Image (cartoon, rainbow, N blue to C red):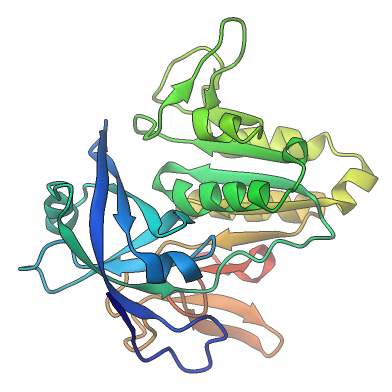
Length: 292
C-alpha cells in the first residue's frame, strides 16, 4: 500500500510515496553484492532512470539507506546493493516475501536529449543501476540499440552475470539481451575481452574516434565513483560532447530537508551548493564542480 508523502519544495518531479514493498526475489552475487526485486507498484509507476528509493533495511534500524533504482516495470522495481555497513548487511538477509519500507521515487532523473541519438552509457561499480535503467528505458522507447554503447567497469567481481561467446568479447548480459553493444573494464578481473584498466579508458578511445558530425549527435550519461565522473567530465570537455552525471552521495533525510548531501554546482548566477537528493542526483556534466 502506498500513500503520498510531502514532496520536496519546488520539485518538478512526481510526488514522493511511502510504500511497503515486498521482496519478490533476492539474488546474491560475489563481493557482498545483491539484487532485490521488489513489489512496489506506486514507486514503479513513477520511477525514472536516476531515481532512487530510501529504504529501511530492517524494522529495527530507523535510519534509511538510499538505493538507486536499477529497473522499474509493471508493479516492481530492482535495486542493487553492496554490503558496506550494518544497514546493507541487514538488507542482505531479507527473505523473499519480506516487507521493505520504501520512500520514493526521489530525485531528478536523466533527461537524454532526443536530438543526440548516439549515447555513451558509462557505469562504474555499484553506479551501474541508473545507467542500466536508462539503457533499458531507451530500448523500450524504440531507440536504435546500435546507436547506444554501454561501458562498464568494476574493481569488484561484476555483480551481474557476464555473457561469453566463443571468439567474441565478454559482454554485459543484460545489455546484450537488449541488442546494446557493451565493453567491460577491470583492473581486478582478468578475463578475455575485458580491458585491464579503467572504464574511462574505453570512453576516451570511443570519443576520440568520433567524426565532427558524430560528435554533434553524441551524448554521455554516467554514474560511478567521483574520480571516474571527474574523468568523464574531462573527456566530455575535451571532445565537445555534452553529458549528464548521476552523483552518489551519503544521505540522511533524502528529501532535501537536512542539506547533508550538498555539492558545488555551476549556475548562471555562479557556483551554488545543491542537494544531490532533490536537485540531483543527475546534473549536467559541465555544471559539477569536483574537489581538486
